[in-house]
Length: 143
Image 1 (cartoon, rainbow, N blue to C red):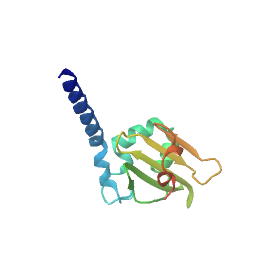
Image 2 (cartoon, rainbow, N blue to C red):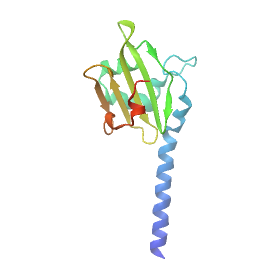
Image 3 (cartoon, rainbow, N blue to C red):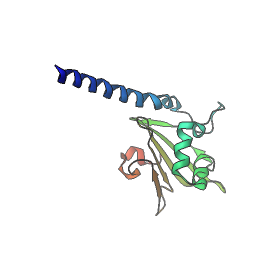
Image 4 (tube, rainbow, N blue to C red):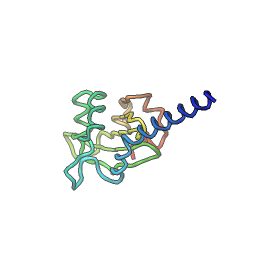
């Protein structure tokens, strides 16, 4: 009897933890189809605390600027499985799409993956958990 109660308690705690983790980032799904910075609304995706804080810890100041403000073109935010995907390109010095950058955020745990210069011979990868290259191919592509 005690084992059954203990098992039930552990099951409830596990379900509560999972629901809490999904709840913390679930509201970001509302950004699907919107652009990270070129929106009519005053809010910008990269200014959200749950996006800005981990990115500032992960990237140095220059790289953070290039991702959040230094690009000239961006696609709409996509949701693929439980990941949010942002694609931007350009350069602070040019309107051409020189540097292609992909940001992927896991909506379950908030982990982030960033790939800069995706098409260059030496792309740069950053992540808060695991490796960018371990993500599914649909998340690694620029588009």
